[in-house]
Length: 402
Image (cartoon, rainbow, N blue to C red; front, side, top):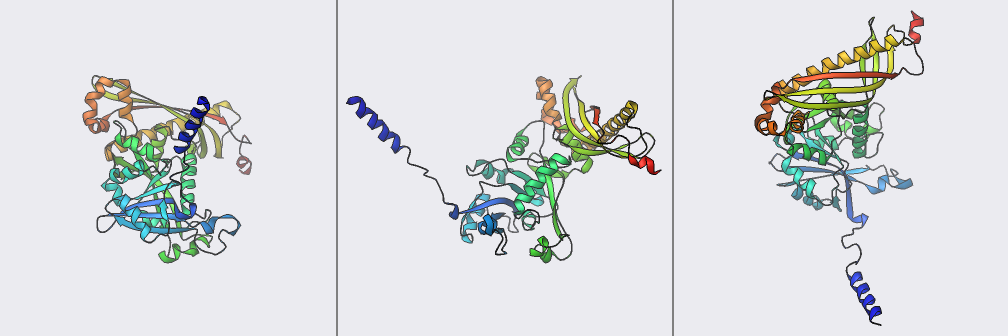
């Protein structure tokens, strides 16, 4: 009897502490936000732009039947980002809910001031996952990016997210960076962060380009385009990389998934080397108190295109193409690294981190003024490129046209 009473009491206590989802919310009370933009307002406050899903326009068979926009833009200003988001409820019938955020766009002017303060909320808020991508609006405001309608994807936020993910995997000049990675690089000694840039290319009348006509035309007058990479010193934007420098960054930091490289054929003309696999081994060392970096870049790929006279059935021809790729890549990487050292003067490659791993004692002295050391650190590069396949044909049919 006592045992049964004890079990009953335990069950009652257990039920008291499992009273269901105390913080549950109904979907019709939430404004699902998939994209957010941060700018500096004219009065010095933060301007927050939220791209909120219009459920009736994207749900089931009736999606888009009314002809209304699949998303709605809400904006508000505040002394803090949190205040601005809460102020949106003055015009939004639903509470802004950023748990499903896909992309955060930061205006260039705000990025130059610093990202640290506005990022605090995003890293602190329990409603936010940290797997959304972050980009910088190049030469424009974030609010202008989020107001552009897109064609292939009803929801512009999904289009931005998918485009960046695809581009980062297929074209090495862009890089998908999440909140966790950005914050880790901001506070890390020996490596500075980068973010992919984005801009809206608008042709003709801006009002037409940002309206419904933009998704009704074959050649859309307004298109969102990811640019090269933005360079930061801690949390402040200090410059932009060009395309070659952006590719170099992705290769060195092991973010290259696949890309295409034009290489010179032995007798003139061009062929295309399609990178399929890439791995960079970085080693730091300190000689006589001076840091030095060794990079061994191993690449596997295929012949993607041939616009020259070359016999791909001969092993020596493959060797010549591999040699051409290796020499061309080594030259480009060396030039790009030197340009970053001279023009931007911040270590985005993680050379300092490599020195720290190799010689922690020397790093304690070097890290005090690492940016100055970074400007002059020698970088030894060895590229090893291998061609695995030449495609479904060996020699090009173009030879028969001559």
